[in-house]
Amino acid sequence: MQSMATVGIFLFSYFLNIIGGLTIAVIHHPLRKGQPMLRRISPALCLLLSAMVIVAVSSPMSVDAAEPVKLIYDTDIGNDVDDTMALAVIHALQNRNECELLAVTITKDNPYAAPMAVLVNTFYGRPDIPVGIVKDGVTKDVGKYNAEVYNTVDEQGNRVFKTNVTPEMYAELPDAVAVLRKTLAGQPDGSVVVLQVGFSTNLARLLDSPGDDISPWTGMELVEKKVKLLSAMAGAFVDRLSEHREYNIAMDVPSAQKLFARWPTPIVYSGFEIGEMIQHPGLSMRNEYNYVDYHPVKIAYHFYRGLENDQPTFDLTSVLYAVRPERDYFSLSEPCDVTFDDAGRTHYQFNPNSRNRFMTVTSDQIAMVREALCQLCSEPPKE
Ligand SMILES: [Ca+2]
Image (tube, rainbow, N blue to C red):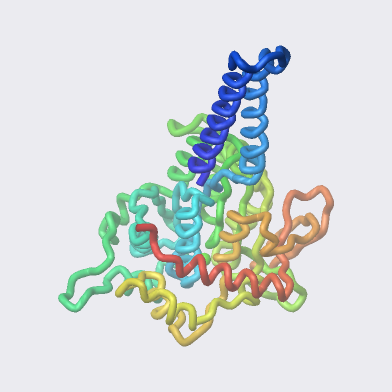
C-alpha cells in the first residue's frame, strides 16, 4: 500500500511539473506578451507545489503507520490450548505486518513442547524462528495435546505436520536464557515486548544472568535497555478471586516473586478474570478452521478442550494487548504495585509511582475482543 501511494505521489508531482512546463511554454509563446513575474517563478512554484503535495499526502501515513511490534513469546505450550491459539494469533498479526516474532522460549519442561511450538510456526510459514527451552523447569508431563498433534497421521499413516525440531532433540536444544539474551542483544533499545503466558522461570533466570560472550550486559541491564513492556498473563485482580492461586504463578512461585518484584520496565497484567470472561466459542473452532484437512490449532483444541466446548482466552488477551495497545480492546487500572504471596495469591496496591497496571474489560470490550480473537486465530496462513 505504501509503495503504491508513493508511486501515486510521484506521478502527481510529475503531472504538476508537466503542467508547470506547459505554463512556461505558454508564457514563452511568441504570440503572448507580458507576465514577466510568472515567467520567473513558475519552475520554483511547481517545485514548491510538488513538495507541498508530498508533505500533505505522506504526513498522515507516516503518523499512522506503526512499526511492527517486536515480540518474544515465553510460553508453557501444551498445558492449556490457549498458548497454541495465542501463537496462531501472533502469526496472523505478523501476516499483517503488525508484529514480528523474534523468538519463542518455553517454560514447560517436556520434550514435546518445543516441537509443538515449531510445528505451529512451520504451519504458518515460519519454521526458523529461534526456540529456547527451560532446563530443570516445572510441568514435566506431556500434557493433553502436544504429542497428539505432533503424531497426527493421514490415511496413509504419514505424519502430517512437518517440524525441524523433534522430541528426540530435546537435550541439544538451546537454553531459553541464552536465546533471550541473544535476541535482546540484537535489537534496538526500547523496542521489544516480552509476552509471558506461562511460568516465570525463564524470565527470572534472565534477570539473574551475568554478562557473557553473547553480551557484556547482565540480564537485568539487557531488559532495562531493550524491553519496553512485559505483557503477562498472570495473577487475579478482582475481589471474588482474592484467594485464587493463578496457575502461571502457583506452578513456580519463587520465580514469579523474583521476576515481578524486580522487572525494570512497565508490566501489564492480564489477570485470570479477563480470559475467563472472554470465552472463545467452540462453534468458531468447529466451522472456521476447515480450509485445511489438518489444522494444528483445531486438533489441539479437540484434544484439550473438545470442539463442543468454549475456551477461556487467557494468553490470547496478552498478545492482543501487546500488539494493539491503542485499540481500546482493554482498559487499564491505575498504576499499582503487584506482589504474590508464597501460596501464589495476588496482592496489589495502587501507587501513582508504579510502572505497572492490570487489564479490565467492559461488556462491550468483551464482545469486541472475542470477535477480534476469533477472526485472528482462525486466519489462514499466508500463501
Ligand atoms: Ca499458558
